Image 1 (tube, rainbow, N blue to C red):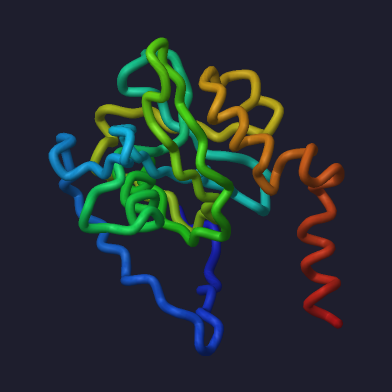
Image 2 (cartoon, one colour; image 1 turned 60 degrees about the vertical axis):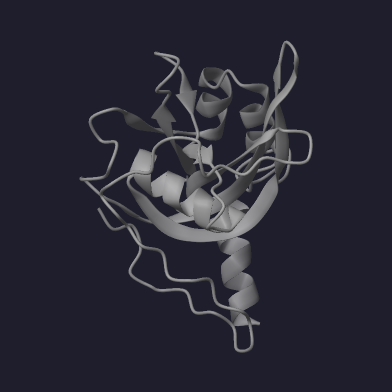
Length: 187
């Protein structure tokens, strides 16, 4: 299902990201994962957003039945954080889109310390496909900001939601975002 027809163009002089390859074969294992100097695993993911309907697309957790999470996974040595985030979002949610901004790096805590650092990006959804690598393993569902805050359990995902462009904490009146954008374009 395509949400938008317009393609965004890279501004003149801006560096181009390598083109995304949408493979139906997901990567598995942790042999190529990136770890920091303290041995903490580096994870990349996206908060996929439908800016027109003001909602997020979340996926069911593969390790915690009943839980809703963002598409994310190991950042591998042969890719950038953005590329890893886009790849994981494709593999787990079947979403193609454009990364609009880096939300932040969030620590996932464990009893013994930090389990992982999550590099989370906001992605404007361009297409939600019917077929994707993990379609038999995952469910996906649309959530408003208020619904997402209620269903998400992980603290780092709550933090990312609160810093997203759909958060009332960031934008007290998110309905005005599209209107404000149109006003700026007319000037």
